[in-house]
Structure formats: structure tokens, C-alpha cells
Image 1 (cartoon, rainbow, N blue to C red):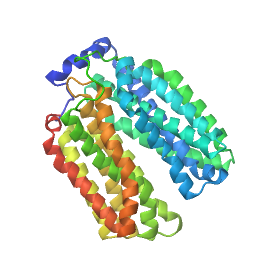
Image 2: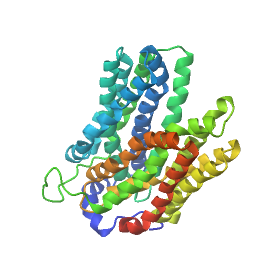
Image 3: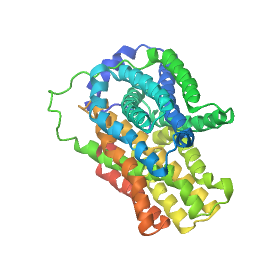
Image 4: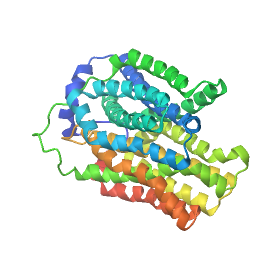
Length: 407
């Protein structure tokens, strides 16, 4: 659907319980809500980026080998997997505005726990809880993003994800500054935690108050998922698989394949991140003009084209341009899919996001290791070429999902 964002007939009954409460609210307060939700996205991204910026220091302090670190880092996805079946249900039952505050507060607290770990097992336990509260926060805040988009009746989800991407840069730059000041990871984490708790304190009252009413009879814990949500999850899986390898393997590709000199090995990752953030801030505008279906098709083709360009012409300039193209390609896919899933008639947004993220999360888990295995058996260029197939898969699946065609 081009132009103004509207709820379809089957979605109105689900939107009314909270939209009625905001019917007479001034535009200035709606903008305040949008800022509050955006700052929660930013805080979630900054929390993770802060931890990521100090991984090398913690590795050295605890005397971890690469194998030790790899094993310990697996605690994060393990924690996410353990809470994943419950995150959407908690957000639905108690209200995402409550679980977002609770989840982010404990996410920040677990960040401090990472700095307190002085033994391998302590870091392992802290990372497990870091993963638990990461997933609870992710589902809750994205549910808030869906509700906020409903209040504005136009796409805003992509910009929210842009705030998360911006936090990645902020966390990296802050980390460099903290290292330059020779502050320990613990002091670094405490300072960031205080800032984030202040953000929570001044913004939690402005989250969308929407406790989802029961729309259907209570079902058993394990039920057959909605088919449309599963297909949306597959599309998100393809995107997050591509995104995951860019996070973990772009630097290696520039070093080993492109053979970029010195500090230019980070150029691939930096170009990808910059364009992904830019694409997310511009994504809502393109969605309004072209529609979600067209944007998803273009995005999928850009992912494939970018990866194949880097494979065919593995030189500094061409690979940088290729990684920029991939960044633009992946930028809007997940926000669009989350937005469509969250408006699925008869299903609470939190539950819908839980279903989609359960499938797509596998992309982050199996993508980077799969690249390593394929590269070991063949080459890194061939592994990137294989991953390129997932981009065009997104474009092809768009026509299969009726909910996208109607969006």
C-alpha cells in the first residue's frame, strides 16, 4: 500500500484498545512518545555495543584463548534461546511498556555483571543473563515500535532500527575513548549503565500503554505457528544470515581476500554499518513512496548484487561499494517484516514477533559458523557467493506472502 499507513479491517479491533486512549492527544505528545521509544531502541543498541567494544580487553584480562572465548560467547545465544518462548507472552500479558522497562533495566544491570566477572565461569553466567534480558528487551521494545507506528499511521519502524544502528557507532566510539582514558571495563560499564538508567527514568512514562486483550481462546503452550509468520520468519532469517556474516566476516574478507592495507581492513565493516544506519533512517520515506513489497524486493536484490560484486571484483574500491550496497539492502528488511508481523490480525504483536524472531534468530546463529566451514572446504569468496543466494530468496518470497502484498 502506497501513501498513508492504515490499519486494515481485521486489525482495527486490536488497535483500538490503545489508540482510543491517544485519540485526543496532541501531536507534540505523540512526538514525545516517538522520542521515548526511539531512545529505548538506542539504549538497547548501546548496551550491546558497549560490551562488544571491550571484548578484547576482557579476553586479555581473563587469559582466554580464541577457543575459550568462542565457547563462552555462546552463552549469549543460549540465554536468548531459553527466554525466547516466553518473551512475547510476557509482553502480551503484562504490557510491553512494563516488560521493556524491566528488560532494559536488567539488561543494563547484567552489563555491569560482565565487568565484575573475574573467572571464566562468572563471565559465562553473566553472558547467559545478558542474553536472556537482551531477548526480552528486544521483543518488548519492538512491540512498542509497532504500537507507536499504529499511533502515527505511517511507517516509523525503520527509523527506530536506525537508532539501534546509531548506538553501535556510539558504543564503539565511547569504547575507544574509555580505553584511551585507561578505564577498566567495569568502570566503563558502570558509567554507561548510569547514563542508560537515566534515559529509562526520563522516558518510561512516555511509552505506549497497551496491554493486549485476549483475542482468541487460550491455547496449549505448543501450537502450530501462523503460516504467514513462519514465511516472514524465513525472510527475516535470510536477511539476518546476510547481516550476521557482514558483522563477523567483513573484516576477515577485507584482510584475506581484498588484502586491504593496514587500518583499511575495517573499511568493509564501517561502510556496511554506515549505509545500514543511513538506509534505516531513509527507509520509512521509501516505504511510503514505494510500498513495503517493492522495498523488500529491491532490498533482496541489493543484498545479492552487493555480495556477488565483492566476489567478482575483490578490490578495495569495488568491495567497499559492494559492502555499502549490502548495508542498504539489509537495512529495511527486518523493520518491514516486524511491522507486518506485528499487525497480523488476531495475534498479539508480542507473540507475532516472538514467532518471527524465533525463526530469524537461527540466521545469526548458524550464518557465521557456516561461512567458516564453507570457507575452510572451498574459499571465502565462494562462501560469500553462496550467501548471496539468500538475498534474491527474499525478493522471490515477497510474492508468496499475501500479507506483504496487502501491506
